[in-house]
Image (tube, rainbow, N blue to C red):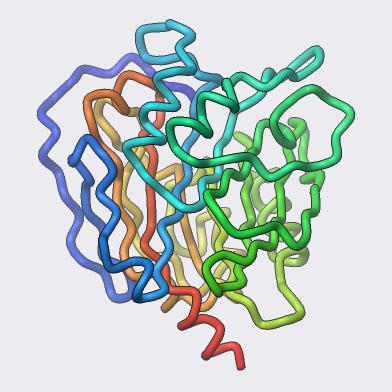
Length: 279
């Protein structure tokens, strides 16, 4: 979804803590990674629709996206709209600059296009190594896809499902079903689904209701779109088991508000919790 012409009111809304995850705004403006992450086995994961690196000022500025990623300071990031949609589908970021500034590098996948990822989806990671990759073509009228990436990082094995769901309701329902069927690991590792899911509704009327059998009931998420005054929770990070997610935050900084039409979201996760429960 793209930003509409909305007036800019004050930005002080905050959601209350929820049963499983707590939601908050990260206004630090720089990396706010907890010093205890390495010792506690926590990871920071994030999702960001970069709007093809075109900001709210209609300027193509991929360097701003890199700076926002530096602020987020995540271990794993799922990007959406990181490639051109047509033609050679070339990637839009300077990957060398990205690595120098953030330490992040993209998961390499097989594709006949010149892009960074698959249907605009890119998974970035800081350290560790990739053990498996899979590209999925999602059903629906629009060309959509998802990445399933298995990573080993700091002693933790995780599966990342990165997706950008369609604008049409019927397509999203089919895409959710396809993701659930494709994302279950055979080794009990925790699964984190993240991306622009293009759905803000909750309950049985939501096209995300199909995630409930695997990821549990979805609770109210913090709005991330449009960036200048977020009204809709289009971007999500959900985990299986749900208890692996300790906290989800909206990365709300002046630069993030101008760099894209979406604000990034990030989560603090503890993969070891999921591994223990799975076994």
